[in-house]
Image (tube, rainbow, N blue to C red):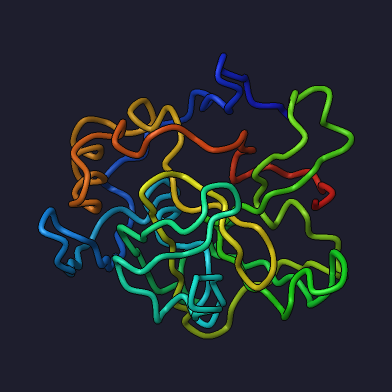
Length: 250
């Protein structure tokens, strides 16, 4: 496995990647967001069906339980302005909720797979019940065999890298599946079905992965921000979404 280069702040720096071109397939993306007056707005638009765009909308399946001050709420029942419980920063308001539908007849590849983590796979109530994650998800893990190389005890890791064929398995859905992701006031770790997962953040280097036109289109999916810098800093070191190595969950 290639370990991401680290920035002085201790977060993964994006490696050079091929630019994604608009000649590729598109898909429909849906978003709910808060405008500057605090009102909920709704947008829907077609955009490239490429990893940078899909990752922003594909972390959790319908029915995933998100911990909030009011108790667990299904991700599809959350609205912008609702607060969720973060691990290190207390309750944080949801500013944006993105969603998309994954169809079984889509192009094959890792972005068409889900990861099912069985109840108690990583200990009692971890997760509380089966957790199904999409290609845009990352969970907080403790990769013991990489700790010295990464310089961190906790790393945000794509769930498919934890698949062992028993407690966590990769599956290809046979029916359409609706997926969601959440963007908070800041990048944070939240609890879903009893496991710790990240809120959405595009990471560093996206301006190098997309051309100017695509970057404008990407930012148009987030009407509540003006610039990539508005996402703020990353809360933890992250492994890339295509990380292939099996890791130990915290």
